[in-house]
Length: 164
Image (cartoon, rainbow, N blue to C red; front, side, top):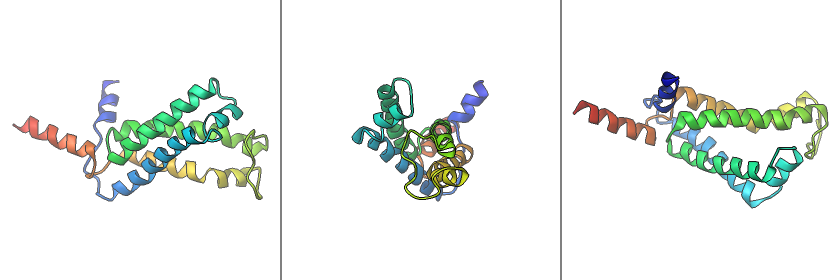
């Protein structure tokens, strides 16, 4: 267990500087989607209520808060692996809680406005953003935040202290 925590909290930070583009994409999307859940009830509490989540107000606010904080963490490249793992789990939960009912045509949320509205093609169309976020977070979990990150800055400081 200790090895897994060490792995999670000490990502490689020697990845290319272009990794920042992936962090900006994923972190930005999570950040503004978290804000939208507070600003527009149909994106937050209303959506969680329609989907049948227990304690929808508390659940929506928890998810929104973690998306705002986690989005900022990804943007700055701090605790990147732990944040990416959380978002991977969140995206899997989002896909399972919203897309199975689109496939079956039983979604409590509005169906897509134009065909296909149900079935596998509707799911594949509706899942595109979730899929992209999931894969970017998976990449960040494995590759780390890159050299332009606070994780790298702290790792560099730690290396300096141990070499003294």
